[in-house]
Image 1 (cartoon, rainbow, N blue to C red):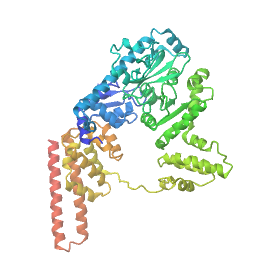
Image 2: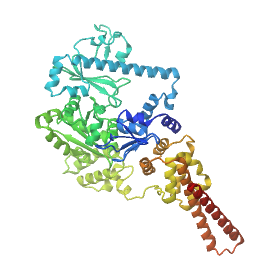
Image 3: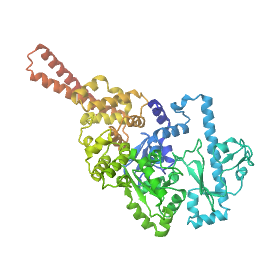
Image 4: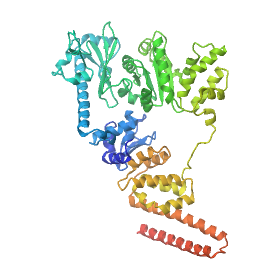
Length: 599
């Protein structure tokens, strides 16, 4: 867990204009910077970056956030990765990493940097050799690829030699070359003629880049006959196949433009589809789709379509993708499966039948729920009790992976209908942690009332200017609780968080802090993001007035209660007079402040 104090300090040092400006062309427009939104298609700039708030906001699609949020949304990073990236670029060390001794930390960083430099040099070497490799160029042209596409994906060629990388790395014995997966070392094996040699030889090279655009691995495609057809980099400190997707770096903007991502099986599918008008394609790296892959994809878009080859291997890959998707399948996500004819892969299909035919295949892709039912029904005779029971047996571990949701409810109902049972019987038989049929009508465990009126006005001020939280003392919060007990809970929580951040608190740091508490404050944050900056002294007066109005309402309520007693008791009479005096003091304070504003 990264301490919030570190997040606050980090956001105080980072300039969001510099962070966003690396990816979006910004122009000064008044107090803010403007540009075309990277999260949706637009011709007129509606995307603003506020250096004062250290926040971005799009008036077109509503996207907003801090520097951390921008890296998460734009690059698909996790929260921790975004924090680490910003910290690294600003000379800070994330506290979680501080468990290492300084010498150990320096060693780890130096090693990572060395491996990254090695991969970059190798990629440039392969690209340079592609220009003079007539057989490799002929192969790419035969596959219909242009020079522009080859350049976009930084394609290269590994020459047919045992030590071609020696020209780039004179110190051919450097350990980084083996650790990065570029060389194979047989020095410890007896009887080996070659002790150290290039892993990739006479192959088209596909650089694999992470979300920052850094080369972390390679895929090599053989030109002639031979095995393996595709050779991948081994697992290294930079590259883990189960975590990376080929083409994601190149496809990020296209995914946003298209509104969905197309997941294929191979490098050539991605490059060929990009050539033919489907640049929103990515591929798994010679391994089954993992839950981590799905998480990465769903950070980019809510609509994922898996496109696998029509053969039996493609079907098996689709089934593994289904298993990986189920923990993340929810009502706001769309996951589909595209199955091409047996004789085709995406590349061959689109070249033979054209882009419109492939687009229709995309539109007609099978929803996850339908694929699930098809899988559990396969090879089971639903005309018999045994077959229906076996279908339920196959479905149980799949449904148990899913979060409680409306989608799971629909799938339970469909399975019940298919196996001649009821949804309640399926839920009981499958021991679902939270039966969705009941959860759908049950009231939520705790739902806080959203503050309205004066409470919301105060919260809006505190979100925009958390340094004013010091004005929210215990008596103010107690008055708010008397006035509206339900809504005051959020106000108290907000004031406590903002006050705890100290005098250096700002809107961006508070927004990140509130993000960790849940979605209760999302609407307020979005509202503040749209507003122009207001002078702190003006806002302080507005907050003072709102606090006074709450106090006034509490005193009025108390006076009405006392009057209702008939003022028969001496204590009630004394308190009634005290309340009148307090009301008079509030009136005089308001008049004095009004006079100051007029001056």
